[in-house]
View 1: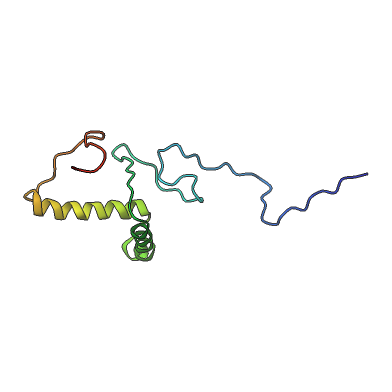
View 2 (view 1 turned 45 degrees about the vertical axis):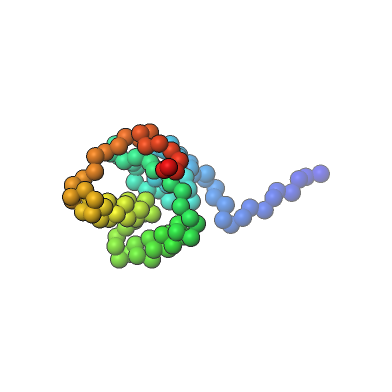
Length: 113
């Protein structure tokens, strides 16, 4: 008795392409085929928790305004938003000067008391 070969989908590739590695040095490597430019030495990763509503609106704003602003990634959009907030806070609270840098791990975790 011969075994019947399973049907192949027209969508299946005959050659398997290597997947993008997610070594932590590139923005979205390995996530849905979207690859940001690699992180440079002066870039650092930031993980924050925000409300789902705020995140969804931020995604929407990035996606809808990207063609007009030239912002190519959500990471770049968030970095621009942080830079704009820093400009306002420098002017309002620090005489327009840059705030002194605080290295990672120096700010206590949790809520302020």
